[in-house]
Image 1 (cartoon, rainbow, N blue to C red):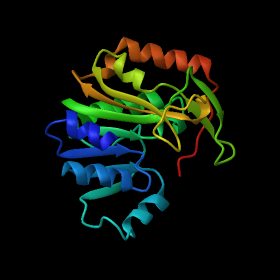
Image 2 (cartoon, one colour; image 1 turned 90 degrees about the horizontal axis):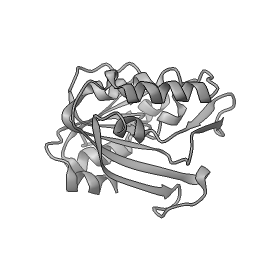
Image 3 (cartoon, helix red, strand yellow; image 1 turned 60 degrees about the horizontal axis):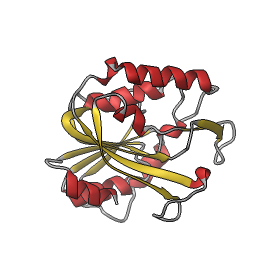
Image 4 (cartoon, rainbow, N blue to C red; image 1 turned 120 degrees about the vertical axis):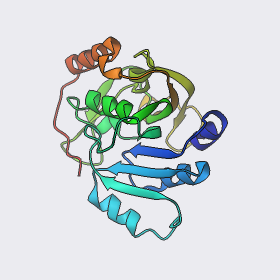
Length: 211
């Protein structure tokens, strides 16, 4: 779906960054379909080693780099497309606003951003079921961009984990949003600061391991 959206709506995509690239294969698919170079930021050393040992898509121009979302090792405006690969819900609440600012910083004006994450009715937190002691923070993260006044929503869709159809069960529903960057310097957005302050006040913050 995202690949189709990009082909239909995005122009001049030559360099892609995915934050939370995981196995690297979703990024590789986007890079291959758009004939672009792909770079993935991933905190897991195991995931990076698995990508290096891959048996498929070896000719794809994709590189995974160890790092974290709130401190990206790239120059300003150096990417045409930046995405969050289903990872914002695991980022510590004190770092998530900085991660969003960093993604905005490395994306050029006139570029695009995609965000895949949970699709809750209202923000809430619960225990991360795959690792004890880590919290999962559900929120409509695309609104941090669209409400800032700096981004426009190009496409948005809600669907279930196992199907591309809408799932009425909130804890089993995710969304994908493709946004267009109209202007820069989201760091000074009052709307972004307000959203982040409200989030901190309404959710207990706990440190999350990233590797």
